[in-house]
Length: 133
Image 1: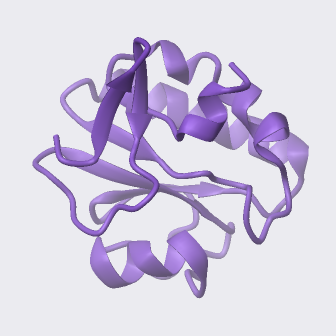
Image 2: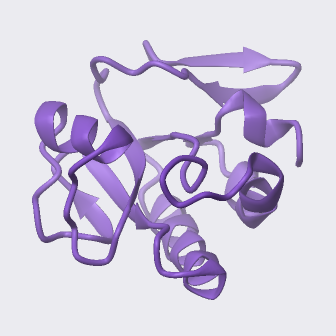
């Protein structure tokens, strides 16, 4: 896997993902409308096949995780993501710092939402998230 490392037993996704290895999935912050116009969403649409209009779930070689609709919605979106990762153990999910850009959350606010996902062997989180788990 070209975009991962193990640091102190933690599965860490690279901060800069320019290409994907076999079975790697780019997890990015989106909006429900699937308008991937900026940040990691733009990278997802331009490089990894995220489809415009798909605001949540698997799309191309990506997973769109809506972050713009409020904290309660984000909690449910992370639960959906965790279930998807659990149900697809052959895929490696590389989570970007979802919600920490345009959506305006901090890593301290978002990282705890990934506590369950962090227990899955096929989920790699940003180093900044591990600092709060």
